[in-house]
Amino acid sequence: DCFLFYSIPIVCNKVDCERLKRNFGHFLLSSDKQGWSFEEFVTKSWQVVYHHFNDHSLCGNWCKYHNDPTDDAAAERRKNRFRKKTSQLFDLVKEGFQDLVSVEKMEQCWHSFSTQKNESLNCVMTMFAPKDKTFSTTAQLKHRAHFLIILDTRGHKEGIRELLGNLDLQLPLATEKFLSNLDEEKDYFRKY
Image 1: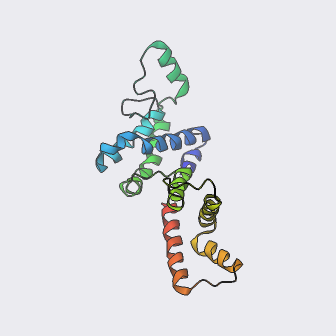
Image 2: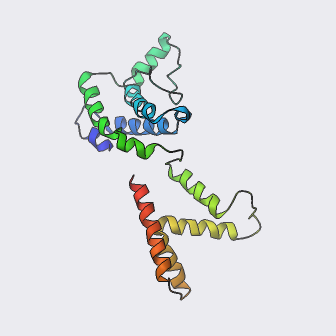
């Protein structure tokens, strides 16, 4: 999605794209979201664009400049840190951002789960190795972690088929269908 902005020569660079992407991630993970209605969530998503152009009036708690004092030193830091709000660049970024914060796409972000890979794996790992059980004196924790990695990298169907193949066992047809459905669901959520 950042390619849309990056493809505008000279006007927008890769650093701008990475900052917009990072700040949108901060926005999504911000604790402010907890009390918002969906309409507020969609409206407030624009704070990322305004933040990029040094307008912090809409920013939430994720922005360290939101409550920053307005003394001369802070103003100088902001001037050097943020993009100048030229109408051409601002309009281009707003136009590109419009599609990214459409109601349909924001519905896909409206959940309490983390979209970061490490957080996702941590949640899944707790299903395989619950935190209230101790695995320190056995190899069970290591084997469970390996199994999780196989499922994550190879997929449910291929990972389990390979494991069973190493044991000279065949994957039953009903189980194969079930695992295929899990993989399709996982691919769908990765895409969106």
